[in-house]
Image (cartoon, rainbow, N blue to C red; front, side, top):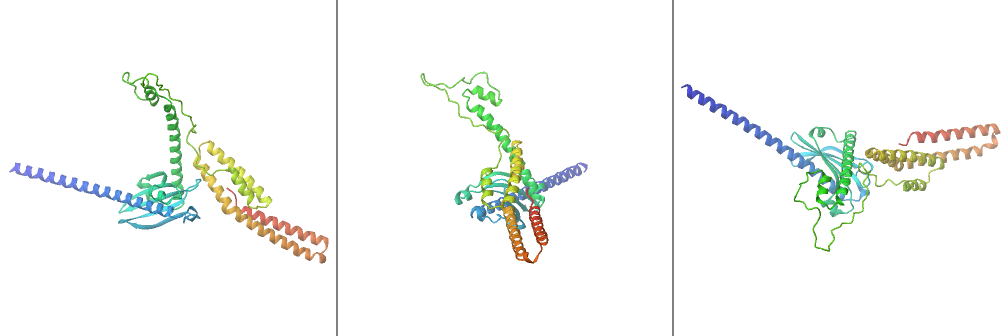
Length: 350
């Protein structure tokens, strides 16, 4: 009787253990399935955004004036996704895309930096992804809007800079190997264990046939990578400022601002702080194209009002004493100068 009880007990424990293992395996399968589905949903969102981007000209992109932070969930394959898309700071014809896919309780956050190409077929079938990242679920919990996106973008810029630094170091190493014909020397350069026998010292060739290889022309790779400022052309910016018709005083102000920004951008680039240099350059361009022209328009309106007031004062000059005329004219000039200063102060340069 005791043996029967022991056998039944062992069977019960075994069945219970098997059921628990099956329950755990089922939960793991369900969890893995949810992660795969959330990833597929996020990738679907990226493809939809890239298709919409490539379907129009660069000038007609829908987020041209401001980033598109789409926080309302878009239904997709039993789950949903939200996204953010904006121009890449400091880069021309490049956009940053963030998509967070969600399925049940799992989330996947994807980042894509895409180079816009004005070729519809190539843009749709083989878009230029210059950098991609799949962030951990903890990073996907927040919203895709400022300032969270700005913080995430800064992290991505750091990763891009690190990638450029690694690529620069690897390029230097490959340059060392490219000019070496001796297999033993190549293995030694790579830090590999070199066999003592079995590797020919150099290529074998029929008598009279030279195996000498002319050294390849080398292009120096900047240590630590390179900057991503393809449209950083000081000469063109100087020309643009000169063609806009800024008054001499404001043009001198912009000249000083440009010199200061150019100096700081060059210093940051020299220190390989490329992401900081790009952000400053983008902020400077935004100021020039969006604020400087508006400031000039406001200054022109102020000048026209001042000239009209001076004409009206001149019309009344006959009824005024010279002292009264000079005092009122000085007051008009003082008010005009104050208005010009307030316009510039309200639109400070970066």
